[in-house]
Image (tube, rainbow, N blue to C red; front, side, top):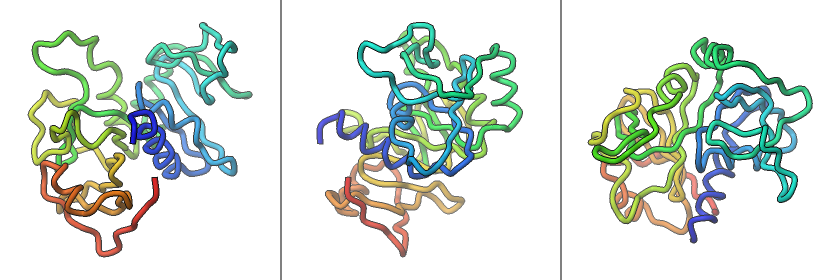
Length: 219
């Protein structure tokens, strides 16, 4: 699979985690694609940390409004009934526990639910942004990412990069499948039918627990 197909496949699977009435924040990068694949029969309210509720799918080419952008400065749409507000209100929503789900990318995530997604030492970075607030404030944290980077593990027994948050990740969704973070470790609950369990384990730097009800999915 090419990278674009991988990203779309991950976004589509995450969209199936959303429920009617959920208030959801999407991190920059891959997570922003989720808004394009929400099932038509549910109403999800997307929040953007730079100050609005009611984020819609990406605009069509030529119909971009440079005044309506998400936290990653990408042009987006706002749905009827949406609202704009200041950063204090935006982070009041986040820190006040009003988000049902946040979807974030990751550099690393480990078997304890620790997340590293903001810096690599000795490289210039813009900062952590709102990630630490989102991961603590949201009721559910989903990590959306490719399973490995240039063959190196991103899912580890213990993160080696500076942490964003400790013990807050609930689910990891990659092109290989869906992994749930539990008190007993990482549980592989869904697997892309293109891969074997052995393939997924080799690509993972922590021991996986294989669910008794492992589901094979088509991507």
